[in-house]
Length: 334
Image (cartoon, rainbow, N blue to C red):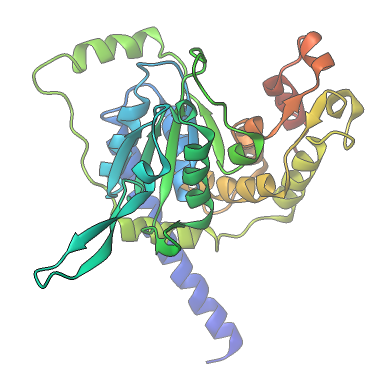
């Protein structure tokens, strides 16, 4: 087979895989929408996070269906999902697992590793900022390395492995805010707002009856892994690459427009660019396209960059906001 024929065969295979993935993702999105009402942007960004192979931070007040969204996604995507309620007394071993001493029938003693709830394909870390920094770091290390080490022995986490953590933005007493280096582990910060009046009316009517809607599986774990592999093979135009590079570099102090960069204490590192590159491909897939556009870069700038930037004291005093600065940067994309 010539190089040209081999390339054509590869392109055909990618297109077939892409068509199957697009159909599955469309079904998954529709299945989630039958259970989680009126949060289309939140659902889309959460799907983008998982498709890009990363972890997401959901920020919103209580009662906005954050937990329900994660549970529904686990069912729809065919993943083994678990939930951990973070509290100040939660220990790393409560998450990772521990070794227990057992005695066999012939009176021999040996240690056996008992896996913790982190050994799931989709983990809901509920109110992650309520746990101590020691427990937070144990989880976040596993998120980065995809294995845990207990008593000197490594234990691989299942694949796929995704963490969707939640935070309550208003009740901060007794919490331990995530440090900047740990926030950087999340592909996106997904802000969950209040529903509009029509959606809230639908919630009242459809969730208080005797037969609430139940999610149905639209994908399997293998389908998700295949979609994640496909995503990394999707072409990205040079204009999109340049837009991502310019956007990330302009969001750092000392670079780009001084009217914006001068308000920043610190900005996103290269990992932000990597996250945005994967996220724009995932957004294209979720919306039924095979190549990302400049619109994808502008749309995802805020959720990908927001938790990776901080204002100077002077900027806060002047009433500036991270969201406002990112929107000004995103307007210049393209």
